[in-house]
Length: 323
Image (cartoon, rainbow, N blue to C red):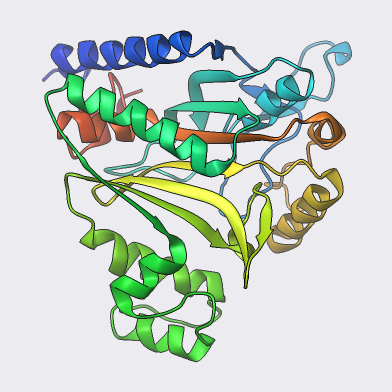
């Protein structure tokens, strides 16, 4: 293969085009509107686990601040559209995350994100499963499905209640399975290690797994529900052991969302040059955001699963190393 040529086969690139066509037909049949939102923004993602690319604009000052961020997701502008009354909508587009490159990561990747007004996270997860099962069926493949809560998942897999177990119990469980320093690890770090290193690898290859109702401390932009212990109305979808999608019953409380952003900034270190500003336009829009659920799905990882590939370079025309 010449260095200038695509690392993905022409056949697989055509398969990607067919997947995009199926997705668009799926949403057109359901009355969900395709939209486009900016790739460059004045504010950005404050999540301390996600690093953003920063760029500088040198044009007329009437265009606004010169410091801009490449989006890590189209979530914030899509929510502004929802607050303005656009209704059910989706976007297929490029997103960017610094520092992520490897077999299953690329700093520039494709994301499908969509929102349903008046739905909760459980109903949206069901629609996502319908979309995925249809895509796999068109590829001549079948998947078993499993729906479970985060709590049930831990109880069944490793006999630990992730909500009630002590930190010492979590540390012991991690130490027995993962060879890693546990200094300065938070409770959520310990739970994440158990999920990614112990539980996820046991998911059957041909199984679509939906996990919902996460710990309240892992709420991100999701609503909280007061059960016997508070849970975040959030779900994740896996194909085999590959995490494919993340969805929420969306928070529309601007005061609570501002506090979460501020907590993110404290964890990052306020004043850091790599820390985006909070998105004030989003916060002002949240008062008008209807009750809704949203989901983000990685399309490159979806292609890996559909085509049975193991490397991002096999499903992209040109990955980061060849861009």
